[in-house]
Length: 432
Ligand code: UGA
Image (cartoon, rainbow, N blue to C red):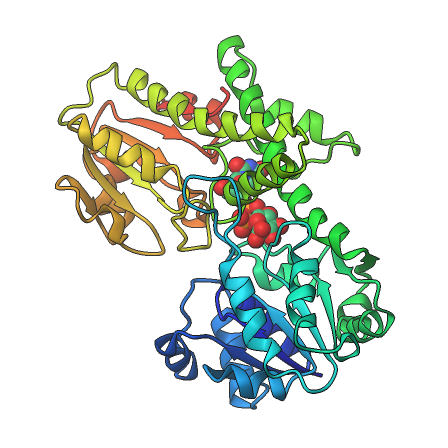
């Protein structure tokens, strides 16, 4: 099938590369000419395991193309995926849909024969209705169908999540569109993956409700971990014990630094924004947001307590600064809050992250990037294991730090508390 992805960002690029690998002809459109030229030269703008290989392989055989010519892309495609950003509006809980409506108008100009126009970006309920209304102002209803097909990709696992999703959600009551999309997804459905056709508004809400639920699950276990710390219970026992109940499930029950990234914080806020518009209380999601905000303060206070309030001149090393492993994404990462606060109190911060140096820390005099774990850790007073990259999972801290009386604060519970204590390492984890 002939597809076009409008927006060659995270969602558009990963989905485009995967669709092309499934044998479709894909054009990725982006207004950023540098990005397009880079992509043509095999330079991938984001860090996502496996993506570079997939893009290069399919570009070589001409199944994926990159352009800033939206007109040509729309005219030559049957299915158009809108994959532009939907950030939170400034000082508000509403999603900013300006990019969605702009590209809708751009697409509208070039609709001459039947097109399926799909929102893959996360968009609030009724966005599809509005897109349809905008197109109907100039084009006949029979020329197009507007469908919601939310994506559930996780950064760092995006290709596997695309190829082996738990479910494919198609929100439309247009039979022709539904049949075509079932064909498009057939290679994935054949792997035993679920395909669910719902109303368009239903699909839009499934995405937000899922992300907000997962965020709530994380905040819940994080709050339970606070109780564990006060009562001498190990949170790992609790997560495993709860997760064995199939009604609860074990995934997303890992206590840690709180959820970050480009999705959960933005989507929980936007869901509240939508609920308020319809005079509905989503008090649970509001509490989740509040709980996640408080998490930063709780962990900062714990760091201060661990260092007995003596931060000045202490060497503090961050292992990992991204919001999670296998991504270079810093958005809403706890390190963005913790590092400046510790720096302000006179801490000398060093950090290492497999995804490299971060521009956001360059303005701080005493925050330094090291390109080796050993250099970052040498003579440290406190190591904060912030992100669960694989290369942090088997470290010999005594050898690395070369100093007595160092402390480890493991925000991901990568190490066993018991083992660390029996090795006479001053170790703190989450919920222990
Ligand atoms: C999330 C969803 O998992 C995807 O299904 C969705 O498609 C995506 O948002 C999106 O809306 O685009 P992502 O933000 O990439 O994906 O990352 P997750 O793996 O879900 O992690 C989100 C945050 O929760 C991270 O900060 C992570 O460290 C934290 N987390 C996750 C925990 O603290 N504990 C857990 O058990 C799981």
